[in-house]
Length: 159
Image (cartoon, rainbow, N blue to C red; front, side):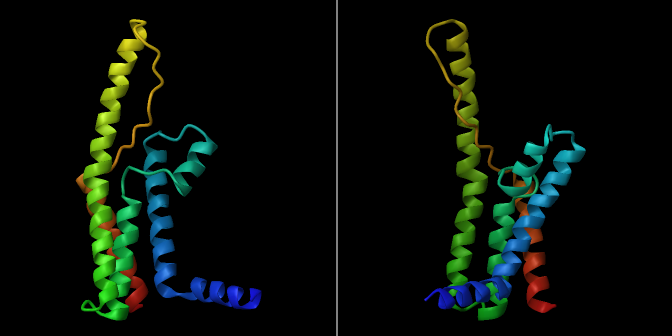
């Protein structure tokens, strides 16, 4: 049973679609980190690792790059008329819509709530602990992520 699991794990890490997605995500996070470094927005080594590994938001969108890579690779491997491509495309569109709309809107709402809460706290009307502000993405960040993801997907599919 363990041998079977290890064999499946080995096949996963040799799968071109999986490798393309992982490289797309890591390279996008790397680009984002370099941009933040040059902008002077990395205060510590901890910030650096957080940016490289899991921090969301900013230029470019790693979520968008990943789903664009997935769609591209599946389109090349299975055909654009396949059910799995349609599934990947719908998943990608929902992810992109979420990055542009829902997460961005909730981030703006959280910022306003934090501002109101700070005023109430300063006037000693009530205690207030700030809530996390999820920033979402600007259209240019999503567009660059999409272009980057398609480029990685094409590279893995054609080269």
